[in-house]
Image 1: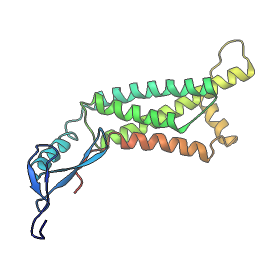
Image 2 (image 1 turned 180 degrees about the horizontal axis):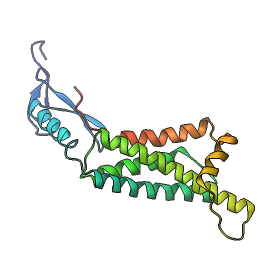
Image 3 (image 1 turned 90 degrees about the vertical axis):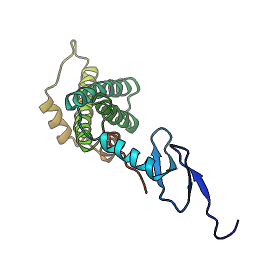
Image 4 (image 1 turned 60 degrees about the vertical axis):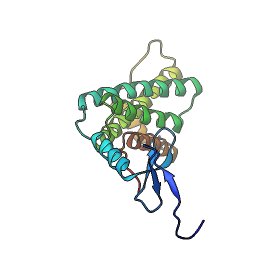
Length: 192
């Protein structure tokens, strides 16, 4: 190959042949996390599609979807904690992902900062509720009360603060869940 010859590649979207000299962009494919080259026209189309995903968000649908994801996540957390006596980061990540995905899906497959913030708040509440439910279960099991007794949330918080229940590991677990919630509905962008 001579020095003056440029290599060619095909656009991953439309198949158009392009030289390395043409403006090309990298497309991050959500399904496989593979970066592909696309032509200038396809990059404009994809940019417009990505921008459209952040507009006209159905906030009621997003809230409902996030709450459904949170309920499923809390159920998983409770099951794993009670059955296996474990609190693991993967379950927190699952809660964050379920909340973020639920918000995206129920809002009409939208993305963006408003959904990221909603997902963060709902995930934090879901993890708190899951920990509260496990705490109540543990108290009932430990004291072998004749009927299931609920503990006021204020007493749960006071207990957690006084006994310094939260350790570095707990903060990491919460962090994993919150990161997953924040990243899942993040707006997509083309990489140059």
